[in-house]
Image (cartoon, rainbow, N blue to C red; front, side, top):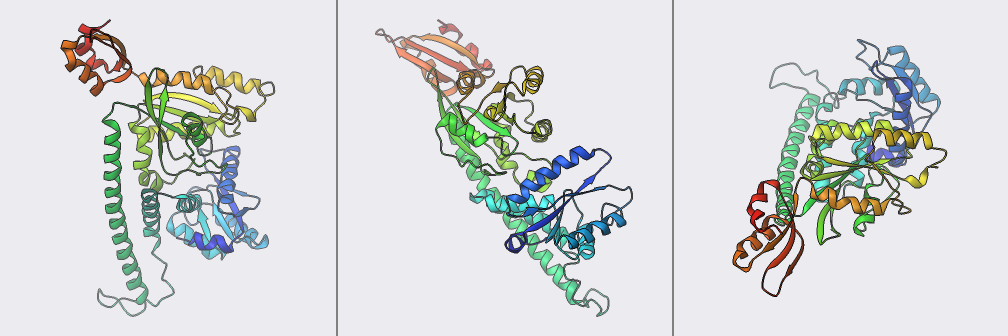
Amino acid sequence: MIDLAAAVSRMERALPVGIISPEEDEDMVREQLGELSELLINLNIVSLEPELAKLRGGRVRYRIGDGRAEEIAQLAQECEADMIVIDSELTPSQQRNWERLAKCPVISREEVILEIFAARAQTREAVLQVELARANYQLPRLTGAWTHLSRQRGGGATNRGQGEAQIETDRRLLKRKIRTLNEELELVRKQRSTRRKARERRPVTQGAIVGYTNVGKSSLLNALSGADVLVKDQLFATLDPVARRIELPGNMEIVLTDTVGFVRKLPHTLVEAFKSTLEEAVLADFLLLVLDVSSSRLDAEWETTLGVLKELGADEKKIQIIFNKMDKIDPAADAVLLARLHGLFPDALYISTKTGEGMAQLRSKLPELAAGDRRIMHLCIPPSRSDLAALAHAIAEVYEEEYAPDGVLDIVIAVEEKHYHRFADCLK
């Protein structure tokens, strides 16, 4: 694995290369290259004019034809690129073949994203998750890292070359590091689970804000809760889940969590490593799915977000679609776009966290989302049934309550359907 952290300080120019597969067209690959350029900007690397190449069947050395690979390597030298970035997955052997050919570092999109995550991780859990993802990425790439050392001292299990011995030592150390990271992560996850269970002791509805990276999820949490979550116009500005308690009309409360943003071609190692972060979406009672209405890649970002939710098993949740950044479009000039979106998503909300447009409508929608499949019950509980009053506070969401002079409790609760019968005798 290239030490990109060290490379960033001395590298300034990168030649992006997009590979067109049979399932993709040129326009789609160019869109993905545009996103790759944004990712590189996050590492202070200048992106040169990208190159395109077609995936050739049976070509395993570079993933593309040898002749096209040689042309790209030559072009990288002519434009004085410090590195080549392939906007696709590379096997360890393909990466080594590219570097031998180009005589400069050659990395994939996966490595770029890993480095951004490493730079942005704040909490102990996020740091551990990134380290684990990087270690798992690096492990299969150890082979060949020590070929400059002699391996010509003969065969046999006890007579191996220095390079082979070094590879095995590094592999053993890396595997030990992976075990240690997994153990530390398990401990952190248990601590996090304990904190979550403490939150859940009170039946407060849990919501999660999900969506593509840089669509305004943190800005939305700030607008709804008055929190001060980091907001920047950059990809992956927020990696760690941030939960905030929000008071709603009717003496109702919810806990809303901002989650890590999604991105196309998110490395599988990161999806696995960040399961404990993304599980906030799985455990939530409802999701606020945020999309950037001004994005030129809106359709692709929607498909990516929905794909990640499906992978997490969270796509069956109650989902409220929210189109943010309405301040960046012209309703008249973009009338066709808005008409199309209204047709595809008739229940969507249109907001701007910057100007406040649509925020009142969203706030009025939250109680309905929070109620979910629960039933609202208006009860009159006599003094003789103090057990029901205690039960209501234990298993239901209490909206309003007031004691009459005769000791009767007038209370409004939201309770799961399975508990409805326990309060039915006291319905007002």
